[in-house]
Structure formats: structure tokens, C-alpha cells
Amino acid sequence: MTATANIKRATNMTLAFSEEQAMILDSAMSFCSDRSDITAVRSLLGSETGYSADVWAEMVALGWTGIAIPEQYGGSELGIGSTIPLVESMGRHLLSTPYISTTIASQAILRGGSDEQKAQWLPKVAEGSVGTLALLDNEDWGATSTSCELSARLELQGSKLFVNDAAVADFFIVLANHKGAQVLVLVEASQLSTDALTSKVLIDETKRACTVNFSGITVSADAILPGSEAALRDSKLIGALLMAAEATGSAAAALDVVVGYLTSRIQFGRLIGSYQSLKHPTVEMLIGMDSARTLIYHAATVVGDETLNHDADVACRMAKAQATDALMFAGDRAIQFHGGMGFTYECDAQLYLRRALWVQHQYGDAQHHRLHLANLLLD
Image 1 (spheres, one colour):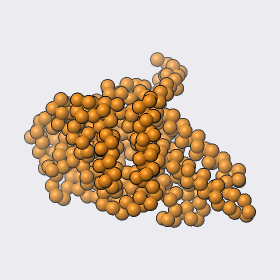
Image 2 (tube, helix red, strand yellow):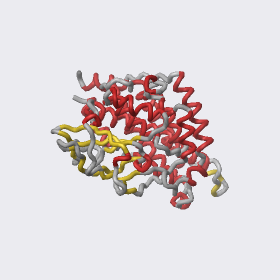
Image 3 (cartoon, one colour):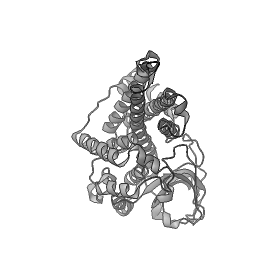
Image 4 (cartoon, helix red, strand yellow):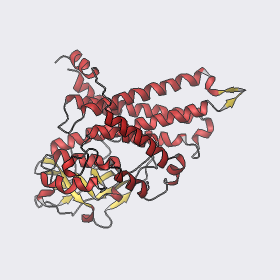
């Protein structure tokens, strides 16, 4: 296929916003708005877990944790695409819970796990158990190797960095080398030593992550996901898509903050929103956010339960690249438009720039994904 044909294929996007997605979006917007106003967000910044256990319990009761899980395992089998409205709404209201981490981990099991692993863990996820992926040995999402080892005796050696929601996780899916291949290994939280977790300070104070030491943990052979290769690839792409959805919601919120300020702040007898130098960047924020929103919902239509194909690969990467760029620009302008106050901790605008700085590197930044897109779209 020629480069031109590849590009046409990538830009011929069908955007189908299903009835189920519309209903989920309406429900999620109402829920997140009620449970996560800016006062609630700030009240949780210094908490141990970074989220409200009561809000998480409500999300579980609403069936959100089972949306992408098949009915035979206690879910509603609406597919991973139906989680996008939820995550976008969570991003818009800075509602941080283990939802994204757990959804990615459950997708790894769904796509690469054995029947026994699925039967054991997917019902638990639907009922509210928390899972997370432990992938990074360093800060490079483009790394193709791992230093964590699973020996012939099935003993793990190595640590993982920036493991999201590790402190509240019930299980981990760990990337390791085993007999010359990369495998994903299920590790229960109860197998960790008491000093295995080291909390890290993140730029985004609504998020939590740890360095986790898995050395000395012995697992059974049935803890290895038999379809690790495909599960690893798909999990990274789904992770990028979910992060893009969250970033898109946060970009919309940053735009709301900017518009609210421009239409209320008066200087020299005029609303500052009347100045062209502020109007134009605000329009750029809107265009960037709308473009990201189009891309995340297009990706939601092409990402299914089967192994992700070329179109899904392209869609997830385009969404992540656009969404993180959109949020970076929106967060930066939100700070700048507020003037000196924007640089203070009390100004809500800084929350969105912090989110932008954190999310851009989760599951690969824009440069990382555009590098892969070049290979996917150009001969």
C-alpha cells in the first residue's frame, strides 16, 4: 500500500457515537459534576490514596468497573469503547480513582489471560477489585526491553517505576523476561513484602504512583499470561487511549476556566476577553480540544475486544498525540491568562497544567506516538 493510500485510510474516519455511549456520557457528566467539584478535588490532594472510597464504591455500584468485561464474568460487555465517555468526564472534573489503572489491567487479562485467569480475576474487577500494570524499569515508554527477570524457578527479580495506584492495588500485572521472551505475570498484592512499595511525589497531585520491588516473589506457572505478547501491545495502546480521553476532558475544563475568567475580569474598563490577543489563543484551545475529542471517539469505534488491528493502532496513537498537545496548550494558556495569580498554588488553573505535565508521558508522549505513526502511515 502506498503512503498516500495509507494516509487516506487513516483520515477516512467513521465517528459513530452509539446510544449506549451517549447514555453513559450523560450519566457520567452528572455523577462527576456532583461528586468532584473543585472543592472536593482540592480536599483530596493531600490524602493518602488521592480519591474518595465512597465515590469509588458508588462507581462500582453503578457498574462502571464492569462495562468492558464480558457478561459471563459479571460485566455488561459494552466494550472498551464505552469506557471513553466515563474517562473523559472524570478528566473534565479531575476525578481521580483507580478506574483507568484497573480497566487497563483487566483488558490485559481479557486479551492475554487463560480461561482460568479470566474466571478468577475479571469478576473481582467487576466487583471493585483494583489492578494495575507494572511495566516501566526506566522512564522511557519506548523501551523494548525490561530488566525485570522471571527465573526458571519462577522467581521475580527487579523493581518497577511509576506503578499507578500501586498502594491500593489488589493485583499487579508485571512485565518480565522469561526464557528469552517478555511475559506478563500476575502478582497478588498479598505476595509483596511490607517494604516493597515506595511512594513517589508526582507533579499531578490528584494522582498516586509507587516504585514497587518484586524481587524474591515466587509465582506459579499459571500466573503467566499465555497471550502476553498481544496483551502487552494492546494494553499499551488502550492505556494511551484512556489517557487521551482523560486529557481531553481536562482540556475542556481548562477551557471553561479560561472562558470564565475572560468574561468576568475587567481591566482598563474592558472585559479582558474583548482583546484579540486573548481571543485567538482561546479559539486555538477550543479547536485543539475538539480535535482531540473527535479522535478519542473515533478510536472508541475501532477498538474492539479482538486483537487491535492497524486502524486501531493508528487511532489510539493519533488520539494520544493530539489530546496531550491540546491539554498542554490549554493548561499553559490558563496559567498565562490569569497573570501573576495564575502562578500561585491557590489558582485552579495550575491544576490543569500539572495534569498536562503528568499525562503527556503516560503511555508515551506525542513525539513517541508520532514516530510510530510515521512508520504506520508512510512507506
